[in-house]
Each structure stands twice: as C-alpha cells, then as structure tokens.
Image (cartoon, rainbow, N blue to C red; front, top):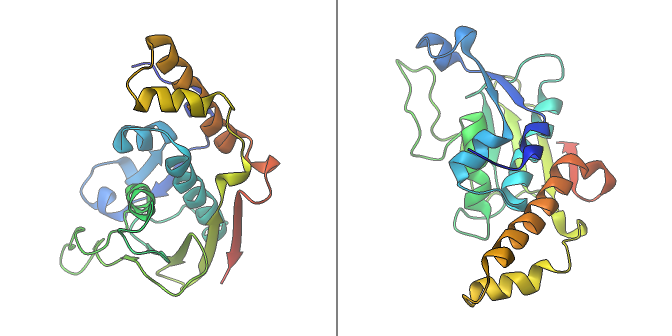
Length: 202
C-alpha cells in the first residue's frame, strides 16, 4: 500500500486503554496510534483530518504532562452540532483516538470501561474542541485554523477540472500531490503558523 511518506513523520499518539488491558487486546493496554491509522479509518487525508489529529495530540500533551493518556478517560465537547460543518469528521477522528463517543459507544462492563456519553455537541464553548480529564476535571480548549497555510495556486483550477470530469490522469495526479503538500505543511511545519493551533487551560 503506497501513501505519502510524510505520514510516517507525524508524531504518534501513545495511550493506555484499560479496556484493552482487561480484555488482553494489547500488552498492558498500551496503544500507539499513527496518522496513517487515522487516514485509513477516514478514507482520506485532508486539512480537517490532519487538524483533528493535531489538536488531540496537543491537548493530550497538556492534560497528561507526566503520564500516558488514558483512553476512555477523556471527555470531549464541541461548540457546533454534530451535523454542522466538519464537526462530524473531527469528532470521528477524536473518537478513534480517545475512545470518547456520543450515545452510541460501548456501554461498559459492570459499570466500568464505558465509552458512551463522553462526547457533547452544541456546547457553550469558544474553541474547536474542549478536552477534559474525567479523573481530575482538568480541561483544555483547543482552536484550529488552517486558513493561514497556503495552498498551491494551481490546485483550484485542477479541482474544477476534476469536478467537471475533464481532468486527465496527469491532472488527477498533480491535484493529489498539491493537496497532500498542504496537509504535509500543516502536520510537519505547523509551528510556522501561529494561528494554526492555540491551546489554553480552562
């Protein structure tokens, strides 16, 4: 399976999943999630998927500065409704990483390991997402704005040709390359753009 090599350069996220430990899925419940894993689940790599991965990575660094984040031990809130904009896409990525779900998640075993009701929408927050540790109540707000990361100027006309069905095989290849170049910039050079990600403790 061939894919852009920069996927492998994105920092992975390591978590401890008590349910995985209990059921013997992974030794000590340690799970390592890479960007390529998220791309496989989403079916594509774009600024939204990349941003959801990044804000989760950064939020977990602040919430768990000296320990491994606990999968299933984090609640996530969104300002938008699930149906609004790209909130659904972002929430799916975050759910895959943290285990948090809305109402449709795992109900638990004998009162333990529940994953449902750990994700709320239409909440009164001013951030892309709020991450909260269930055990300590510590919260962080994270905002993500990729608008400052420029796209290749040739990408838009190529997209129009593709949408119209008039793109050649070379056009399609170029479009994909230009698209992923912007995603790469977001994921590997984000520190060049001060407004890309901002995080604050609540």
